[in-house]
Image (cartoon, rainbow, N blue to C red; front, side, top):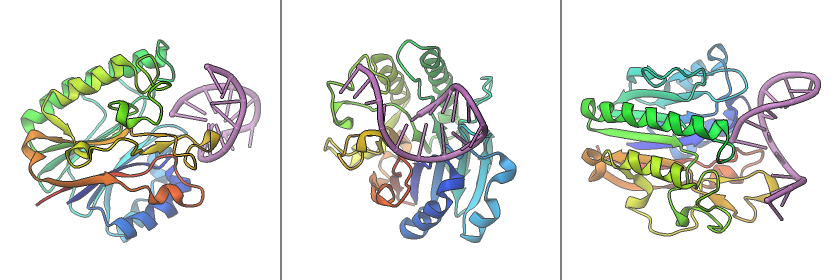
Length: 256
DNA sequence: ATGGTAGTCTAACTA
């Protein structure tokens, strides 16, 4: 089962890219972030025509998440239970007995801002919820745009992207580590040791052409799934296409 | 570090 995460930065603009990539890569499950679409505008029938069942939770202009899968999606959960949040950032479902939690983690803008504090509160709520989810569903994948680069290998310039910088700050990395400490593993690092492999490149300053990226799109697998995670990677291809998302899909393959 | 670009939507916010 190929399970992927992709921040499309507007599904309205990127639907042709998503269609092309579904055909090229043939994932079984995809978590999408930043659809920026209200639910009545979600292209559900088009995706069904392409063989993907889908569930979604969106809003106008910002945020918006969806799950696509070839097989039925069961026990769908939208949002973090018990955490009041107007922003549509979380959707979860179970596919072939594997729990999939799709996250669009808060960006946080800058260290010390209100948005940064919201990011840390949000991550704490996600942590407590995932702890409970793991009890119910030992076979679990947490994927998404984490807006956190795990370590120095995951940034193009560790001097700029340091312990005081948004996406790499000490508190953000500690929050990610707390998630991993629940019994989750960075799927990418099970099969790739190298630094300098990124999933996001800023549109500004020709970030992609100069490969000034970060790895912030992650697929975490639970202890129970670890031995079945046989391959993982980041597909840079759609980032090379005309008018691309600023993110590339991250994926992990789970042996059935 | 700044400002640069992109999406949504035409002013300004988010990333």
